[in-house]
Length: 440
Ligand SMILES: NC(=O)c1ccc[n+]([C@@H]2O[C@H](COP(=O)([O-])OP(=O)(O)OC[C@H]3O[C@@H](n4cnc5c(N)ncnc54)[C@H](O)[C@@H]3O)[C@@H](O)[C@H]2O)c1
Image: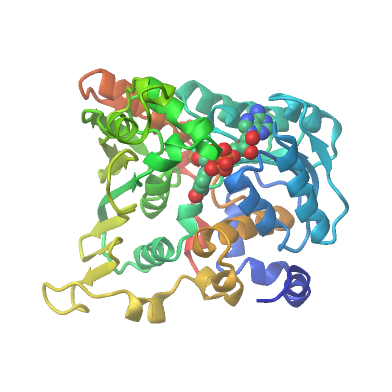
């Protein structure tokens, strides 16, 4: 493995043109929404350097043109750890902010930054994003961007008014199979796209009960909410295949939840009677199932289960008139190419139809953070900012995909009653072209 410095030196020469492989400039220029003037360097303030924030910091330090100028976390030693990582990458020590849960406001007010990036617990995403934009910075967040429809609107309104990027970093849109699926869709190989199935099916019981990291905040949401708390990993890639917000949009959804058993049972099996975690009450149904219909008539099933024994899956199924691709396990069937009525593995398809961005050795070698997809999303963000292009995901995607948290909860509470998904683009979906990245 090259060191960080060697990596930067080896790749610097490639420059922005290579970084933008896969983005036809004309397609990108058609959409001037939130395209900001190009910038040579991107000065970043990072808020929340726990598990996922540290992955981003490490990735960003490998990308040409990035300067990490400030670090904020409520835990002082985490700030120091991230500062050390920046210094180890031969950058000046960034300013540290750890004077409490709203210290990011001081950082946004007094630091000269181009971008504020947050990987805090869910309840802090919107306050950080708004503080960033109101202080003239672009803003990026981990997922979901917001937990209520009102907060989604706040982000949209601030980004439009202040003309700042406000994007959610949905890394699963950049995973290799998801990008292959998108590429096959763009090439028309699956025919007309009719249906998608996706989800976040991840046994998080141990993590939710941990006395550090996500255990400090994630379980609390299971005590107070019942719906799909984490819709975007599954939904983002399907929404891109269906051109949601770019010629299409979500119309309405219905949602139901099963009983909740997993967390209660885990606590009973693992903790002593005197442990307060043994006596918590939960609201989140273990299995939540949602059906969305798009305005163009496609259907999407979105699952959520973080409470039961099961292997990981995001499903990632795309059904078209001519074929189907699906993950966990990976398989594809295309009429006329595949043996009749038999699934194929993806190997041959990667050879022939790999998404251009995944042909890059730089991406394939970047294993830090979910096998390369986290590096790719950070790389694309910086490439777009430096080139002055619209980002791959924008505030409307952040709002539409994240709005499911609140809308599923409302539907569950109303015996599955349909909920309209707001048009966060206020009609712009009709004139916004499909995402450039998908065409090579
Ligand atoms: N995209 C992915 O694959 C992926 C994976 C893991 C987590 N995440 C997302 O990343 C975010 C963080 O998750 P995590 O696993 O890193 O959790 P974590 O608990 O490890 O990290 C959160 C960090 O934020 C800090 N923090 C909390 N409140 C703060 C505040 N007010 N100001 C500044 N710092 C604050 C905490 O001290 C901690 O260091 C969540 O939104 C989560 O959904 C995404």
